[in-house]
Image (cartoon, rainbow, N blue to C red; front, side, top):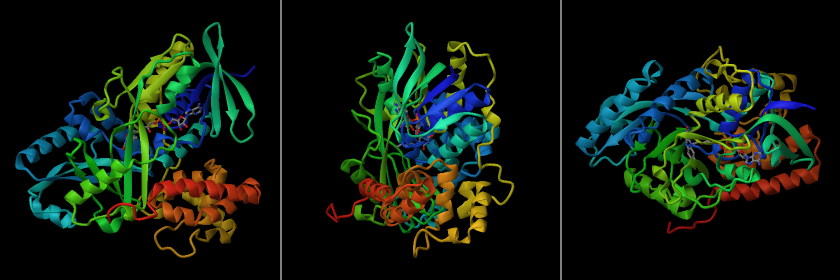
Length: 516
Ligand SMILES: Cc1cc2nc3c(=O)[nH]c(=O)nc-3n(C[C@H](O)[C@H](O)[C@H](O)COP(=O)(O)OP(=O)(O)OC[C@H]3O[C@@H](n4cnc5c(N)ncnc54)[C@H](O)[C@@H]3O)c2cc1C
């Protein structure tokens, strides 16, 4: 009988990080994801690799310190997907300016040798020059600081590839249905291949539940009805860059709900978010609430001269934070700490809850350290601080060109075009913003485990998140290319396009809905 050392349930940031930590230490590891990698929360973040200035304001120095270190490791290990980004906090009251400046100096100091750059004070004129769209009547000046920005779901795809390099099995579209137990102890899982509907028994010395907001469903399989998760929805909207032309990001430090609001340039668009709304039920495709959209638009309009309307939204997407809390009555989720927590059941089931994308590596290290004890595995140290993530061995230009997100893989994609020059064709008949080529779709199917049109358009190209209408335009083209690669028929093409359209319609507002 084949017995694994570690089974990881869940292929988001947490599960993929654990699978990499485990396999790179030499443990026999398999990861099972019920859908696509990062289909859940891990493709829906604010795209920040950060210590978290808000957590600093809350006095959570330990989390900020840890996250700033991890930010530095991520930049070193995934330079093709993580970049340094300038952020500016505008100041409208002098005493707050002094406060932010001290806080950001502390932020910079905490990052030590892994600092991203020096924060500094900017004059009113500097800010107006940088952000002509900002309302300036009460503006006094601003503070500039540095943080990281990344492409979350592309990082998860590259993490999956890195796991494979270390001998790990990573399977998407494989859902864990139940746990196998022997004398009260977990000895594996029963999982179903979603495409073939075939079930498999997978035996293992340890089982790790890394299913984010779905963790309670795995705990239930272990007869544990506890409810440690408080899901909190965060929504973003994406606008055309004409609403905000700067290459720098801006942070509105205190919104009417007591949070910060980020306006960040992202792939030539502007990403605005986020919200923090407690939700009762965790679902895989959460949809923005009208109140969230209205809040984001209203807050943007309060600080900026342009007046976006609901119909200007190119894409709006929501994600659920898997927050851990013992306090069932705490509904104001913005106050729940973002640190992670390990839960160990008497059966030996290990659940990892909470945390952030930025700290996924440290979370993984902590989890495997515990798995070694529980599974009585031979003790070996974590080596992930120095593992280069697939794609990052870029010994060439590090400019911000279109191909950079693929890192060194761009050479292989261009190789596909050399072999078949027709693959250079653009997926759009005419469009000068999105340069997606047919070759990339082929690459994604062959080497990035894309199985559906949504996998390609949402989490590999990111088009669903940038411009939902445009993503519908090329869905048929993508489906046909995929069908050829995967030997699928016309029915498959039709049903893929149909279900993708239904999904994408939830990401934008085709009709004029509000009082525009
Ligand atoms: C709005 C928002 C903004 C954020 N912004 C940032 C940010 O800027 N920077 C940052 O560092 N962090 C950010 N975060 C936090 C970060 O995104 C999350 O902490 C992280 O993505 C959680 O990853 P996860 O793997 O735990 O969960 P998920 O990504 O949800 O992964 C869990 C996976 O488990 C799978 N699964 C569930 N049940 C099963 C089963 N039975 N069998 C197999 N698989 C199963 C699901 O399909 C899912 O893919 C943000 C979060 C939100 C919601």
